Image (cartoon, rainbow, N blue to C red; front, side):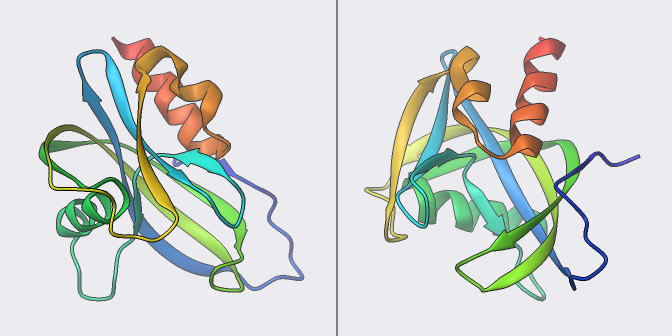
Length: 146
């Protein structure tokens, strides 16, 4: 069963939004993205999979956009559903989030997506920084598997 996070209200229409996100690990540290708006917060790099796009190309694209880094050897780790409001799109979403473990390889420059910056964090500190309960739970499960 896929874990679910967020309140599901029958009076709301939720649009399904598949997404690919990465836990990027190198030298016991994780590469996160810090997004300034709509709320300043750390996130796992990643985002929506565009229509006709496969998860792995979407993951590579999103990581470069949000961190400026290329990655190698992504391997699937987990999936969860998150029911939430997405203010950038003004919609309620059923986000189907696939989480991949990968290694950051090369920094091409700063993130190309406005309002983002790359941040290196000690791997053990990552769950405490993530406001998304699904990401937080997934990272905790990954750390417990080590």
